[in-house]
Amino acid sequence: MKAAAFYDKRDIRIVDKPVPEPKADEIRVKVEWCGICGSDMHEYEGGPHGVPTMGHSGEHPLTGKSGLPLVLGHEFSGTIDKLGPEVDTEKYKVGERVCVEPIITCGQCKLCHGGFENCCPKMGIIGVADDGGFAEYALARQHRVHFLPDNVSFEVGALIEPLCVAWHAVRQAHFTMGQTALVLGGGPVGLAVLKVLQTVGARSVYVSEVADARKEYAKKSGATEVWDPREVDVVQACKDRGPHGLGVDVTFDCAGVPASIKTAIKAVKPRGTILNVALWDRDVPVSLSDITTGEKVLIGTACMVEAFPAVIQAVSDGRLNTDGLITGKISLDDIVSQGFDAIAAARDKHVKILASPIKR
Ligand SMILES: [Zn+2]
Ligand SMILES: [Zn+2]
Image 1 (cartoon, helix red, strand yellow):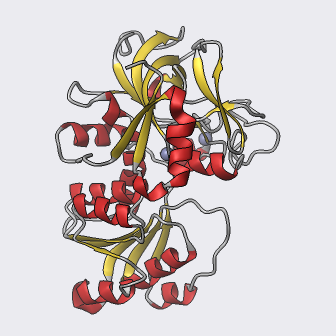
Image 2: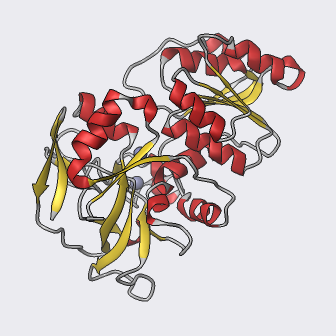
C-alpha cells in the first residue's frame, strides 16, 4: 500500500508498505481522509520529538515501536476493511463508515480502570507511537473505532479527533452555559475550542490572535470579538467585559507561547479557570502569585476521554458546527509539497488540510 513515512526532520517520503494485518481485536480501516495536525507539523519541522517512543526509553511499551520511519496521522476517517479474529462481528461489519479514536492505552492500570485512560502512563497515539493514517490502510483496536452517521461526511469524520480534543478541554474547565471565555490562539485547536464553547452555550467568546487570516477565521466562526494582542490590552479588555470588571470565567491557552499563558492567567477572574490546551516543549516563567491570590485554577488537558460518541452526535444533529475548519483537501501523493511544506510556509493561512490516499 501507499503510505507517507516520516524518516526524519523535513523528510517524509511516499513509500510502498505491506498492507497491515489486523490481529486479535484490531480492525483495519481503509482510510478516506486524514488531517494534518499541529503535532505532525512539530515532528516534521523540528523532530523527531515524541515519535515513536513517546518519552519511553527504548521502545514504546505498548506498540513495541522504537525507530523511524513511522507513518504519521492520527485524525482519520474511512471504512472498515477487515476484522481481526477476536472482533465482535455483530457490532462491526466490513464497509461501515467510521472514524478512529487514536489513543493506545494499557487497559490495566489504575488510571485506565478509573476512567482516566488518557493519563495512562503507557499511553501512545496511533500515528505517533505506531503507524497511522497517512496511508491507504491503518489499524485500530475495536473499541477505538466509532461509527459515522450517514449525515457526517468522511471529511468531517477526519475532524472528529481534533474536535474531541477541544471538547475534552471544555469539559475539563467545567464550563457551563452562560459563561464567558477567552481563547488565546486562533489556529485549528483554538477554533475548535471556540466552536465547542458555542455548542455548550457560552455567552461570549473572545479570541486573541495576531495573524490576519486566523483573525478572519475566528470572526467567521462567530467569536464575540477578536483582538490583536499587539493592539489591544487583552487582560484589561477581559476585565472590562467580564462580570463586575473581574475578568472572564475561563481562559483557554491554545497558542502555547509565554505571552499567551501569562495573559491567560491574568485575564481570568478570581476563582476562574485557566486551561492549558497547548503542547509545550520548554518551561516558561508564569506568575504563581496571580494564581494564589485570586485562588485561580490552572488545569491541563490531554487528548480526550469518552468524547467521541458525544462529539459525533453533536456534529450529526447540528449543534457543533464545523464550517470553515477544512481549508484544504489534497492527495496523499502531494502531502509534502501541498501539506507539510505549504503549512510550514504559511501557517496562518490554513486551518485543517486533509489528505486522501484515494484517487478522486
Ligand atoms: Zn491532532
Ligand atoms: Zn493504563
